[in-house]
Image (tube, rainbow, N blue to C red):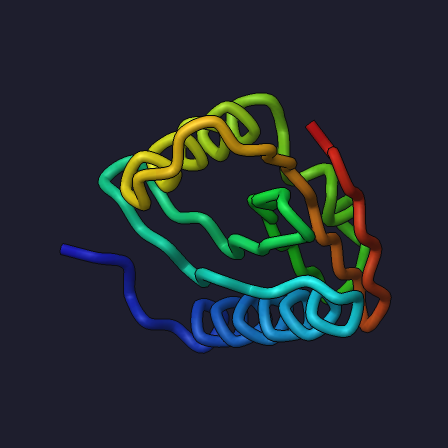
Length: 121
């Protein structure tokens, strides 16, 4: 059986969706094209896949109400980075893309402040 659908769970999901919307708008304002959102495989989920010129960007979005429990970007540790790299490979294979330029970004949102970390890992 899945997790209970508590008000806290709902607020966290809403905050995550809001953060992804904010990040997508940020990329688009900066001349990028969002080409996939919330792409899933059995391994996990990619938040955003963005085309920045000829570079495919796999962007992890972390949104927190405050930094009470640490900065949002700190939530993307070594294991999460490994999983996102694997998901990036899976996404490229699923879209029949071979040798292309890729980048792994983190968009960290604390409160209403967005911090873009390009080439985060």
